[in-house]
Length: 82
Image (cartoon, helix red, strand yellow):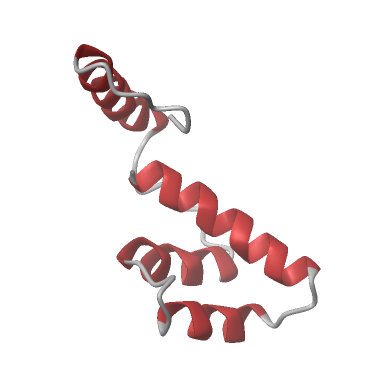
């Protein structure tokens, strides 16, 4: 789920910026609303600061996603987003 959050955070910030919204105000509004999440509060400021430091590798993300997908399949659960 962390990977989804990071990707969606980046898309939301990009959309806000392209719409002419001040990204720092967007950050403040989202973190004080129902859209708030720990991942957004942690990663969005780094994105806005241009911090490209990797805090996890794609290998870890893919491993975790694989485990989640295998578990879902074994229980017959649909996972179209994954």
